[in-house]
Image (cartoon, rainbow, N blue to C red):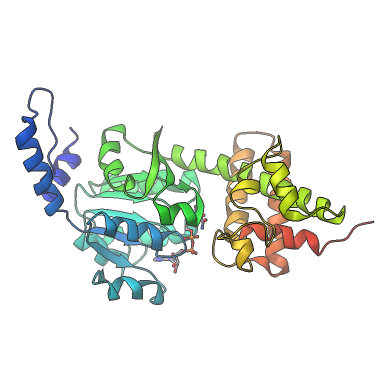
Amino acid sequence: MAASLRLRAAASGLRYWSRGQRPAAASLAAVCSRSMASKTPVGFIGLGNMGNPMAKNLMKHGYPLIIYDVFPDACKEFRDAGEQVVSSPADVAEKADRIITMLPTSINAIEAYSGANGILKKVKKGSLLIDSSTIDPAVSKELAKEVEKMGAVFMDAPVSGGVGAARSGNLTFMVGGVEDEFAAAQELLGCMGSNVVYCGAVGTGQAAKICNNMLLAISMIGTAEAMNLGIRLGLDPKLLAKILNMSSGRCWSSDTYNPVPGVMDGVPSANNYQGGFGATLMAKDLGLAQDSATSTKSPILLGSQAHQIYRMMCAKGYSKKDFSSVFQFLREEETF
Ligand code: NAD
């Protein structure tokens, strides 16, 4: 067992057994209930659309939280619920030896880790730092090196599933890092997701996430185009969505997150594209895909086109709307 894992195991009261040391069932039950009672605080940095429901799921599983967000209002709910709110990422690292970050971009993650009051200023040896933000895999690798120098462990664990899955605890986590540490990460990530997948070395979680989101952007634009065309041909949007969802055009964007207002309840298109996954964040992820495609000499013809569309949307006032607002964007475009 890695030294850092042992340190955390000792600190948290959790037990890890090597072969032949496992206690009998009765004493195992006793140990398990003790470890449940002695859950140590988990740091959580970045309580936005995703971080907020993810942190709440950790609370539901009995983990006390140490909270920080640059935007103080994001912490209010947690303070009101009795969780500890601190004033910098460094203060989080001083009080918790397991920290999850859920931040918008690479720059924000660098600031939270390496900034003047960043995690690295006060990180404890043996700490486990899990970054669930979607950022550049190269930045994840750099952060991992910095963290390692401090005697701690870094893993990238970006998520798929959107705000709904974050609320219901059904996210998919794509995890990159030292395999020996995966079980320790899984203990926390399993409280927030139904799939926790080990991808390989640091940065591979981000690689998987970038590929997924490029496909998502392409399929969302495709769904919006098809729905818009059908509506202009006189079809009822609900009927068209129903047909697509029982046909070969079906995809997540059509059956779970339909971009057309009035087709589904409980999705951003039903709420003027508020909340959800911002168009800016999608443009950011497509930029990461573009950079990765350039460095690996991979053709991404549709991915590049999707990147341009989301950049254009951001320039035309859609930046704060959910990425499914590409439907509204297309509605405003009329061509010959
Ligand atoms: P968000 O903008 O809603 O929330 C980010 C939070 O981080 C904000 O509260 C902000 O104040 C805070 N923050 C920014 N910089 C900070 C810093 N230096 N220190 C502390 N707090 C800081 O973003 P989100 O939608 O929650 O997305 C977070 C990440 O998850 C992004 O990388 C995004 O690409 C990814 N993601 C989002 C979704 C989604 O549906 N929203 C789905 C999958 C993945």
